[in-house]
Length: 496
Ligand code: NAD
Image 1 (cartoon, rainbow, N blue to C red):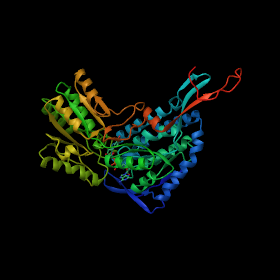
Image 2 (cartoon, helix red, strand yellow; image 1 turned 120 degrees about the vertical axis):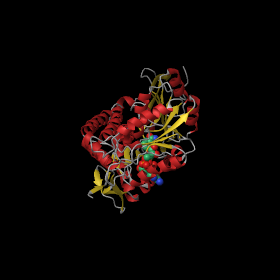
Image 3 (cartoon, rainbow, N blue to C red; image 1 turned 60 degrees about the vertical axis):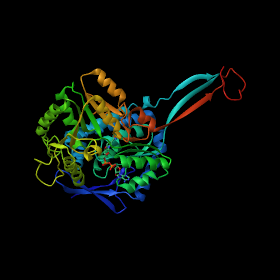
Image 4 (cartoon, helix red, strand yellow; image 1 turned 90 degrees about the horizontal axis):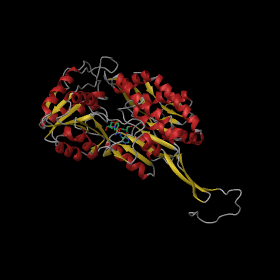
């Protein structure tokens, strides 16, 4: 056990002083791999103070300079993509190719933020009254914090900080304590790109670190991504403390398969979207709703494909699915196999069979068929490699399930009927919709976010909603007298 992950404050590594640390594991062997420092109030203060001190200079940095640093950061992350993917895989467990994919998706947000000179253009109206012009300017907020989940240790922070920093804010990232190393490597790359000291800081820890940020007067906004109960807590606490807040929560994504769909395409999609990253994705497909009579044929095709999936360590190029993130999480996910069967589901594929040897946090792809809405496996966000199949008698029955579900993150419909797809996209109460696309993660220039219990707040992440979240608008009304026109006009400008 050698690894010791420290905070990153003011562009240098800072060892923790709170005396508290967390354990880091290697999920494929179950071995303890190192420790991460956990912040207490002193480290929270130090990180926020570094970000606050850096703000005036960064706010005044020209848009050209900010864009140049972002372009350099983009090149550095691209150049270190494989290294970052290996860091992620070692702590999270996902296969290296999948981890490289998450870095690539995060990079798309950096590329979007490289356009910041264009994105920060305000409006201008000439001559709103005689010799009076009106315009708007977008200004940064100050110190903003990002609190992120374990499942995308590079991509989710990159939904936030490229846009926040490009807008002129300074940033304190509190990544997941389960896989904190990628964020420190990203901080080093920012420094190499020439980002001034203190603009990007990383603070590790648990609830104590998060609460320190939520109650700190100098933190002006909080972006959160994680589970729904914590998202609700973050939203309420940050808002009570007068902060701007966006809190993205959990999910239970349904994929509706109509009987006219291409069932081979649908089965491929269900398997990749259900078991990629061992189902530890907020956009993973968790429930397939097979509309009669598609169910039996679809389940048979899913089973065929699952039988070919290779489960193994993330750094083995042959592996298609790695272990889960911790032993406790694996045990919790596995408990849904027993509860599902006890409550009447059919275990079509049992993920406890044929696992790699050793003490890693393994659970293979599992298919629970004939799941019904009252079962725990249907009601809870499992966040693991368990795909539930629900049978529905009609499109309307499938829609009733989606409407009744408390979550509204992503959903997909598989059909060859354009009219049905159009009706679905119009009616469904979900933030991100795929049509014959199982994981409809929006491109960086659109915004990512769910509805219902999958989002607390009104701003989605990145895209123009990200720019909006990380800036305040100032409206200016200005009168300049024409030198040829003598005299002063008193009073409020009026038309004419
Ligand atoms: P989590 O909610 O346990 O943790 C998220 C962050 O909150 C971490 O940084 C953690 O340290 C912190 N945290 C945990 N408990 C806390 C507490 N009591 N008080 C204050 N802070 C606390 O989530 P996770 O297990 O790391 O990630 C998985 C969850 O994230 C799933 O529910 C998944 O759906 C969700 N997720 C959602 C999205 C989305 O875009 N909506 C994206 C990725 C993950």
